[in-house]
Each structure stands twice: as C-alpha cells, then as structure tokens.
Length: 254
Image (cartoon, rainbow, N blue to C red):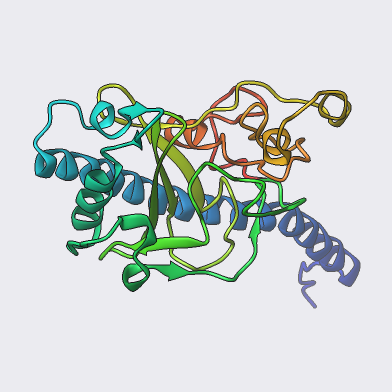
C-alpha cells in the first residue's frame, strides 16, 4: 500500500491559529485605513467646495480682497460689511439669496442635536467650548451634501465644515473641521500652535472657559481639552500626523 502525505490535525490547528492571530492583528488596522481614506476623500471634496464658495462670494460682492472687506471693523459699527458677506456666502453655498443676515436666517439652517466628540474621542465638544469658531450645531447644506457654517469674528472669516453631513462619527478632526481664509482669500487650515498639559492649563488664568479649552488650537491624541480638534485642519490638508510631525494624518486618526 502507498502511503499518502497529509497534515496532521495538530498541524492544521496550529496553522489556523497563526492565521487567526495575523487576522486579529491586521484586520482592525485595515478597517481603520479604509475609514481614514473615506474621511480623506470627503474632506478634500468639502475643502474644494469651501474654496469655490469663497471665490464665488468674492466675485458676487465685487471686491479685490474678500477677507479684508468682510473683516473691516470699527468699535462703533463692528464688522460693518458682515451682512453683505453672509448673504454672498449663502448664495454661493446653496444658491439661496437671503434678505436677512445669513447666520441667523432659520429658513436655511440645519440645527443638529447630536453629540460632537473631540479628536481623540475623550470629551464631548460643546458650544461653549468652541465659542468664536462658528456654531457647529447650526449649519447650512451644500447641494453636494457637506454642511458648512461661516463666521466673521476675531478678525477672520472662519469656515466650519462637516464633511459627511450629519453622518457619524461627528468628531472633530475626523469629519468636522474649522478653517479660515487668509489675506489672499485662500482657505487655509487651523493649526495647533502648542500642546498644553492639564497641569499647565490649570495654572493659567483665562477670561473665559472657552479660552482654556481652545488654548493652543489643540489637535492631539494626548489633549484633554474639550475643543481638541479645532486645530486639525492644517494637518488634514497636508496629511501630517500632529503628534509625530510625520506623514500620515488620515492613517493615524485616534
């Protein structure tokens, strides 16, 4: 009789065990990379829309520098061109020309009541913790699905975006970002200037609670600030990991 070569049951079980271990180690990362690529695609699309909206509003108003026009300020009148800018932005975003101030017109708003999480998902971001950067709970819908808000404050034209509408994860630095226009009317990213420790923040004096939460424009897996993620858009645009300074923002989302 001829003997047939075959694997023993023990060898088969060992092989299956090794395959299972490898799968357990690699599949979560593959899923994470897949989600990251999806967020990146949505971000790039929304970013391009934001830039198009700014250019369209600029042409509608008919000024050489849209940002300078919108942030013109006096103590008596405040941002006296803001209504003109909000109306132009509304028209450029959704094709709707409003008569009242863009930011307060309830007819075209989407008001959200869902939770927004921080970049590292440790905290819930609140209106009070992101004060001054535009109301992420009161947005306007572009025909392509992205939600945006424009806020003329602090000498800047801020653009807040939710790249995938109201879909999850509704998390700063993942699908929700804050950007602004520079002196040449380009949409640029908000960037972390410094990562503060909890001890440093506790020992500093702040006029408002949101000043503490926003200090340094946080974007880090290590930050416990409730506004952690508002400084992530620069890293997202340039695909840089904020905690290492190396390439791979979208592959390393916490």
